[in-house]
Image: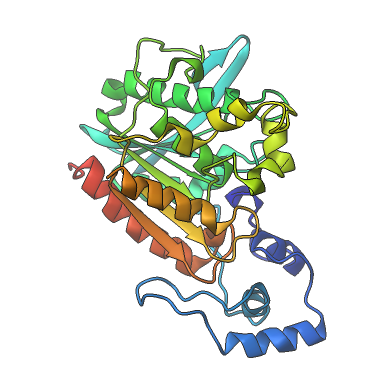
Length: 345
């Protein structure tokens, strides 16, 4: 899942609960139990938005209108220009497209950001990240949100190759876009988080670069932001996942263990990897929290600068909630400023 599955205001409660991790509508007895659970919020460190004691408690918060969702289609801010359907690469006759959000006037040496949507590698849209692209362009970043080849059109490594292609495109176009080619970050959620990590940790690995364009340009990045993405596809959860099997062209782990390893961001991690910001919720039933725990531990062991927003009492797609979204933006702003440098007027 990813932000693509988030409901707009006035959509059904059932849709909202599915998005936020609930699988069924609340019965009267469940609602009562959840109201009681609401009185016992999960503990947090004082700076992160308080989560919920259980999924039922979170569902009740929405039912009681205590849980507010973000607007996924905010208006274009003043001082930002949007360019749609830009071709950033081509595989055969298949065009790869992105939307670009830039401050006006064109900046000088601004950091570049590339957002990669989620959707289980088989769904989602690049427009899903408008809540972020408009925000960061308003701050002065040049921001792209990309489409990539999905399953079943093309299995792994097509999606990784396309994401790397987008980095090469942005670096090649840096002069005309007003971007500092040495300061590009990739950001994604769920499957998009997986792809962001793959881009960051397998820099310039030939078999994952693809042939979509700009072969002479590096796909390396300066920072990675991962929202609840799977980091290790060789773990029991991933081996049992139908989505992972589809990504890997229907092959089981027993049939192709090396393929599962090649598709695992953590398998490519080494010293010198780009700084990484992680967000993951402890109530996540789609991608287990131990994926982020293990990622954080390995980054620490390799002395890779990183920050871990371990969100107690929040599910998958938790940044659908206004409080989490606002917190994530603040953390991202500070992280990007630290690792990409200051924004110039």
